[in-house]
Image (tube, rainbow, N blue to C red; front, side):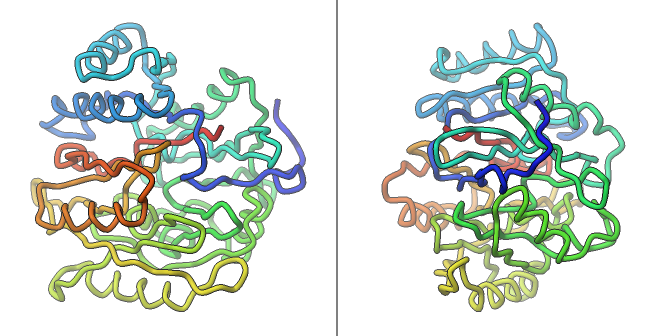
Length: 352
């Protein structure tokens, strides 16, 4: 069912990622060109991630067909996943980044769940995106949930889940580079005020925090989930670079200064915690978007990308202190990041 009111009017809000999940949605990797020459280990990284997630919540995996499902099931089983917790859905995809292609779920305080079905256009960069754009409709039908197809100025709105992050209480993080730049422009002509009205209508957000630019190597042109993330209603972790010669130094220093002056939806100063960056990672001359901020919060668990870097242990320790009631687990992502994303990019939570 496609609803014609708005989530805000219906009493829905976008829950924070740390709120209880019903499931995590993934899409099994298949697009070899995303990992040129290094695709073979990637399904096994997915298998390891499913192993951890299936211990704490249901895992819903999109697969193209029966043969892909059989291969994926074997890898998950050999990796030690709790297979009764894993459900496969036959739904073709262009790529595997469900943070951006799956729906963003919303919830009422009485527990009603619905989804927002934003238009996806391949990050305004890739032409092969129409199959991914159909994923939210598929999930809505399978789950028998109502959906909204957000519009503004009489057109469907393009938005990826990695472009926004929320504390679930009315405050949202995003970047000017992603939403307001004319490079990889998602919604030509939209202003800051347009987006703030959109976020109120569809997420019940009253306080939008605009950071500047994203990290070097980010193929999406400024996704906030590589840069700054809420870890509780009043605390934000932000990527920080100490090497003045690094391309990220000035960008991250500027965002850190901005965040320290920002407040939550009640006007309270944010608690800002620095998260280190790994040393630059290149493949075939291209810088990759390696960031510890691309962690994923599951039930009783936080999965953190690691890169065989000395800063791995600092990032794990920092996040461990911020999530004392959750297990914080590192996932080796040197192979995964070649696809220009890691753990948060490949997951989308369905709230309970």
